[in-house]
Structure formats: C-alpha cells, structure tokens
Amino acid sequence: MKFIHTSDWQIGMTRAFLSQEAAARYSQARIDAIRALGELAEKHHAQFMVVAGDVFESNQLSAQTLSRALDALNSVSVPVFLLPGNHDPLDASSIFRSKAFRDQARDHIIVVENNEPISVPGLANVEVVGAPWFSKRPAEDLCARALQALEPAPGVTRILLGHGQVDSLSPDHSQPGVVSQALLEQALAQGQVHYVALGDRHSLTNVGNSGRLCYSGTPLVTDFDEVDPNKALLVELDTDTCSLTPLNTGIWEFQALQRDINAPEDLAAFAQWLDAIRGKECTVLKVGFTGSVNLALAAELDALLEAQSHVFASLKRRARTTDLAVIPDALDDNAIALSGYADATWKALLARAASDDTATDALRLMYRLAGGGREK
Image (cartoon, rainbow, N blue to C red):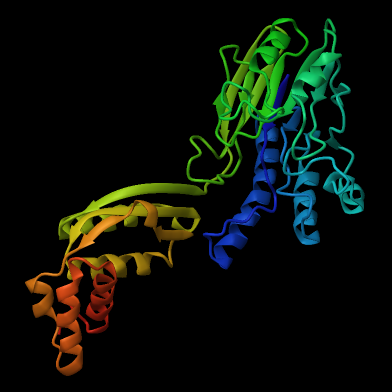
C-alpha cells in the first residue's frame, strides 16, 4: 500500500513582506501545490492522500480562493482525507461544513469529522482514524482521545491522522492539547495503528525511532526558520514494514542571512552571489549586514538592493541583525561638489555623524542625491 502524507497547506495564507504582485503568485503557488501532489500520487502509484490538518489558513476565505482550491482538489485522482486543524477547526463557522464546500467538493474528498475509523475507498482492510480539531484551543490531547476506544483489528492496516505538537518537540508543555509521543509510540507497538501522520510542524520531521511517526512538513515554505519545507512523504506501508520517501513539492525559498561588508570586494562578492541565484521571482531574502563602510560603499549597497528588489519576490535589509557602521572619510568629501547652504549642511552633518545615526543617514541621502561616486 502506498499513500501521500502531507499537511499544512494553509490555502489563503498571505505574507506581509511580499508585494501585491508577489503575494498573488505565492497564494496561487499554494493552490498549485495541490495539483503537484496529485501528480506525484499518480507518478508513484499512491492509492490515497492524507492531509494532516490546516488545509485552509482560516474558516473565512474568499469565494474565489475556495473555488480554486476545490477545483485543484477535484483534479486529484485518488481519495483525499482532509483533517480540520487549528487554523480551520470544525466549529460553527467551519469551512468544511459550508454550502460552497459541500456543493463543490467531489465524493473522493473526505473530511474527517470524528474519531470513527474510515475505510479507504477501493482498498480492503485499510482505515484512516482521525483526530480533528473542533476549536482553536483543545482542552485535551486529541490523538489520545482518538486512540482511547480504538481496539487492534487483526488484518486491518490503520493510519492515525493527527495535528499538533508532540510533547518532545513542544516548547510549552502546559498546553492541554500537546500530543503525547509515548502514547503514539505505544499505539504503534500494540498494533492499534500502523502509521501516525502528523501535521502542524512545517518542517519535515521524523519523530522517535519507529520510522512510523512523522511530520510531513508544508508543501510550500511559509517562514524563514523552517528546516526542510516544500516536502511531502510517500509512505509505503503494511503491518510489518514502513518506508518513507520525501518528495519535493515546491520551489519557493525563504532565506535569512548575514553578510559582512568592509571593502568593495565584499560588496562585489555579495552582488555575484545574488546574481547566481536561480528562480529569483520565487525567492524571499532578508539580509543583515555587519562591518564598516564609507558613504560611497554604503551608496553602492543601497543601489544594489534597490535594483535587485525588483527581481526577487522580496529582498529586504534585516534591520534587527544589521549593524553596519557608515563612517564618512576624505574620499567621500572629495567625491561630491557642494557649495553654499548644501556645503554647510554637509559639513555640519559630518561633524555629528560619529555619534548620530540620523546624521549618517542624512549624509547617505545627500551623497546619493548629489551624485557622489558617479563618473562625470
């Protein structure tokens, strides 16, 4: 038996650091990932797909976004099990119970609404057991509740579909909804279930040593701290063996980096590195700079970032980690020709620049406006 384990599609997600143009492409890419997963299912002969929570970013989506997502889901040729998670719980406003969803979703789209085992269409003796969320803040371990009344069924292969942080990875054990890793491993050992498909963690993560307890990660990167996003898992499973194969599902990249700039050759190396990146239109960069430069080099850096920002999905200076000292020198003073009030202002700002960042910023602006460093 083969199936695709995926999670955290969060259809409808937006990113504030993206321009309107890039944000539209990013939102569409999240829907395109559904079609990509369907194609991977066909390519690898997977017989069904499980989505371990957070299918949608929220229960309030535009009609257009929902219709496009369901059109993509309807194109998938295998049964797809959707688990409501913390972003899209089965509460009074649930998108899964909306008329638009019910009218448009085809029969092979199966919403997991309770803890009852669900037979996988077309497969004998294969069941999915889910732990859906009914609110954004559950009062208990939902996976534990799903397992509580589940007896081993000889000859039946079961997949537990859960969402949330296991206690071994959670930073806050005080939350009542934290999932017990030990309980999941016990259920696997006793044959209650044979694979646990988890969602909520956006990085591909194998939990424990059983090889049957995993987070698939998100099929399209959502943040800079995700270790191994843009993935899904192909699971080959029977009661005795389990094989996991990571599958690539997305091409967007989010990178946070630091660069040390002290000399023209440092800036040239950074420019060369930027130029070598492929798929800039799907690459989001935030860069922190450290070092010490004069006004001329600072102006070149500003000009480089401004020019390249039009090519990348997003390219921004990382203010929190930037500590780039701009120290005017004699070369800066000689590079521009000022007179009268402008010259007096320049000299006054130079006198204050050593102890006043605002004065340094004003000098950088004056330098650029006066054409400093440009060939005459």
